[in-house]
Length: 373
Image 1 (cartoon, rainbow, N blue to C red):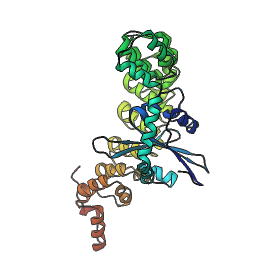
Image 2: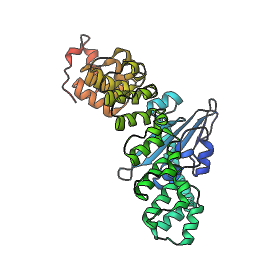
Image 3: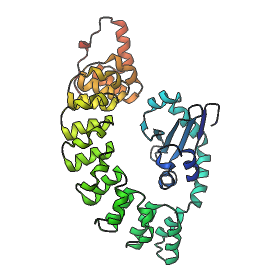
Image 4: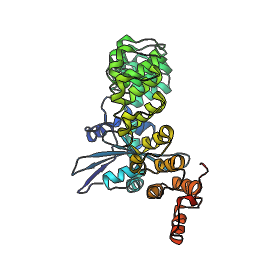
């Protein structure tokens, strides 16, 4: 789809994906990774990249058809690779998820035919065939060495076919901390891997993964790196420090969700210094109110009511009554709306309660008794 406002493209090969997504943080648009092939060729994902021509902002949607139900599932990301709800996507773009899904459905057969053609010429197919045929010949090994990337498949080949360390492909293995950690565990026996430690320590997540999977404990030399990422810092504090980590708190506080988790699972109490951050995320604010404050949080209610699940959980577990101000949001998710109507309103639907309101102008919240969900 191409018009005056939007470029909407389905990338069918890695090079196209990298070119379109070169200014994003999408893993499927990184030249040195295998995620594009993993998603598109191995998991039959249809990727849709959208770019607003006026702002140059970009979004990605991944569609996957469930083989059992044939229903299309989807995940939405902004250009920073943050996950978005369909409501957030609509607010940011003016487009609906259904509009994009319908475009995909119209062209699904053609897309899959093109993907199948690309799959057949994908160099990774050589490795798949080698694994299938248990081919450990020197000629095959030389072919695989010359293939760029494909670290996950190379690891699978080493584990299933070679059954021994293969230094020649370790430079590819070391490009991804998760794959490198699996290589260490499955091939090197889970021992310290000094040659790879510089790579692991180059990113907070990589350093955490090495501490978690290989060292299974604190890695003091890398803590100055780990503390610079909210996700890595939270999990490191949770798994290894097992308590307050003051040096990382300013970083953890940058993420509403991980600030809530740190308060709930590490501090196990209120974290007043982080509440101005937590209250800006609907899910984090709702969980913080339910699990930690255990009371109304008026300052966060406008945020909490922005998402159906957060609004329902807050109404059910904090207010313990109807929350009329949030019902428009709750109605946007049919399943959650049904739970809300059944468990809180004691009605078949929210619309039934609204009709009762029209017929009874003396409605009060006391008319509705809450008994859990």
